[in-house]
Length: 122
Image (cartoon, rainbow, N blue to C red; front, side, top):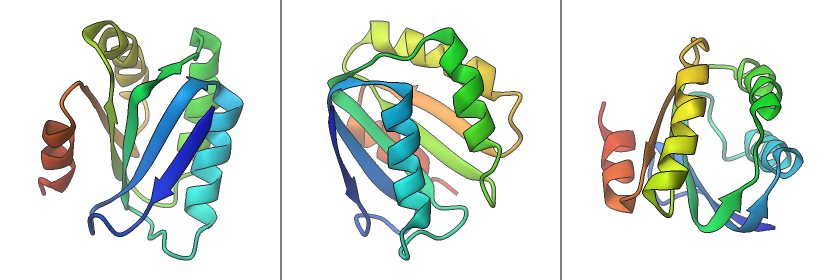
């Protein structure tokens, strides 16, 4: 797994681009790195680009991710760009699970620009 974090492409979100297999520990590490960065502003959205990656999250990882997400200092939007419809279907499990979280508004996409447009919509 490798990832890059890009601030500054938008005032509304930070971009997290993945390559390879992505496990829960790495995902938490990347988000922790983002929120500890001086450029991060509470409420800033996330664009998570999995087009060159394979999320290896299991159902039990949803609880771990939810506990981390629940610590967010403000409400935020999060969009995941997946490489195909199968990965979108898997991401929709998080979308349903995440509906219990009051802080996150999450949506999966296969089209990068649609994800950007959704994040930029106020």
